[in-house]
Image (cartoon, rainbow, N blue to C red; front, side, top):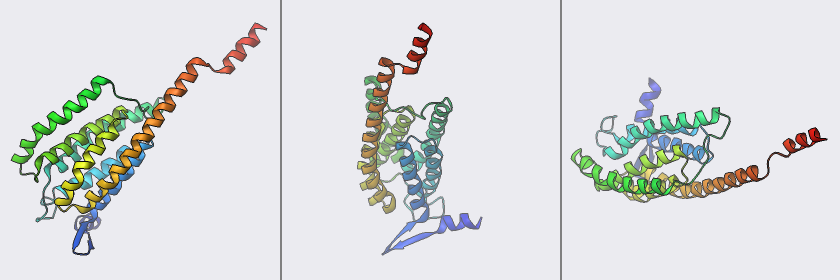
Length: 237
């Protein structure tokens, strides 16, 4: 109980600005989860869930002990969405791993799947903007809605193994940095800058991994296991 009280109250003072320890820790967990995702590690999902839980309390600051904090409903809501989708992604990757393969094999989304991502991003942002505004979210509300939809689609794409999910994160980061900075969430805004660089790196890592997997499958298809041929040849003799 003492630890929880400390966690909710602790702040780091930097100049005339203060940073919530919860905000910093939540973003550190998020970064660790992104690193695990780039390496296709199953542990990326539970680590990410822990970070989401911490950041949820940050973006609903007035509810969790910070009466003068700016509530960002889109940011808070996306943490709940993250947890829900991450549980599904965790199960999906773990099941694949238990079957003796990789947790996920990166591949490109199909043309229809890419169209779905684009339309869902635009339509979802348009639909959520008035909802978030009516609930009193921070302006410009469309940015909050964009971040929410992008986060949802990127997490879904990661669970499906689509290489393009990294580019969705880049689109989220481009909008998230100025929004979070203007709202005073400096730690998260700075982490978004780093995330933007990191997600571009992740995109190329998954792209290369996809190419290696395709090359491996092609080799195995065209050149079967030589030990099988050796056994067959010995039987013929």
